[in-house]
Length: 77
Image 1 (cartoon, rainbow, N blue to C red):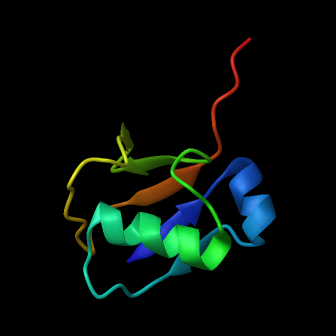
Image 2 (cartoon, helix red, strand yellow):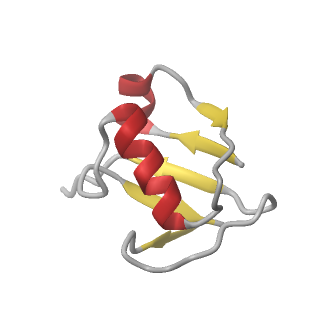
């Protein structure tokens, strides 16, 4: 699946996107990958699937056609 990184997350990781292969294309597997690979926890990021921010605790199946974005926490003002 193709993952896009935005904001501070892209700066920390050092890339704006990447293709990853998971044994199970679920939101849970993706968050585990982010934690093990980049030491990111779900408290550090927002995850959007098809332009909608989703709760990381939800059991969501991700397809190859889905657009997945990892976003920095939003700042208010």
